[in-house]
Each structure stands twice: as structure tokens, then as C-alpha cells.
Amino acid sequence: MKLENILAPDCTICAAESSSKKSILEKISNIAADKIANTNEKELLLSLMSREKLSSTGIGKGIAIPHGRLNNTDQVVAVLITTKKPIAFDAIDDKPVDIFIAIFVPEDHCQQHLQTLASIARLFSDKNTCKKVRKCQSSAELFDLVTNP
Image 1 (cartoon, helix red, strand yellow):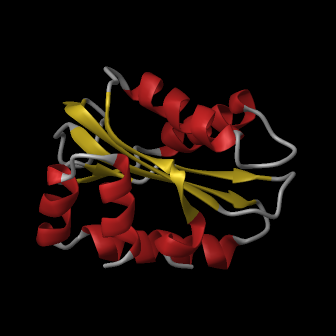
Image 2 (cartoon, rainbow, N blue to C red):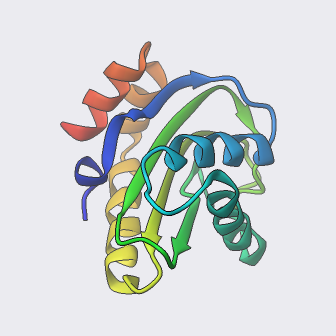
């Protein structure tokens, strides 16, 4: 599944204020809670934190793809946030992160989950795309950029 199929304009935030890994995951969970039926912010945060305990979803070069699996929904939802200042996120290259592409998927959609992660990783592995994302001045501009690559 491609990012443009699971990301909504109101789940795209440009230049957010956040100062820690926990605070950005809370912000992501808060945004997604309005989109996913039968769940709440605490459940979403727990799903992200559980995944982070296994290993960081910081893939390097200032990018993280936090993701969580949910057992009480059939929706797939993405949240895209850039931060004004990079945040320490235990990324594999030990560099701080300023681009966060979070996804929430149903527990029983393993193959779809992996394909979605791969699609997002491909999109953000392009240096030019990342440069453009970091230059966005508004959430609308950011949404348009990533949904119309």
C-alpha cells in the first residue's frame, strides 16, 4: 500500500514542536486517534512504544518509521510529521530525526504491513525527496509533496 492511499491532510504536520522521542510518539498517537475507530491515544502509543522496545524505527539520515499493529481495527492509517528541530531517536546511524512517517496497521495484515513499510522506505530513501520534505513551509505543501511524488 502506498503512502498516498493511507495519509490524510489532517494527519500531515509540518515543522512541529517536539523535544523527545516520547513526545513525538504521543503527538503521532494523538493525531491518529481521531482517525482510527475503536481505539484511543493510549492504545496507539502503547503499540508504537512496544515496537520501539524491540529496536528503534529510526532508519537513519534523519528519518524514522514508527509503526504499530492494532487488533481492533481493519484500518491502515499513516501520520507524517516533520519537526522544527531534529530529535534524538536512537536511530541506526545515531543521528537525530526530523522526518517521522508513522503507520498503524491491523494485527492480521502482516504482508500488507511489510509492503507499506517498504514503499515508505523507498520514497524516503531518495535524497531529493527528503530535501524537499525538509524545505516544506506548510502542512498542505508537505501533504501535496508526498502524495504526488
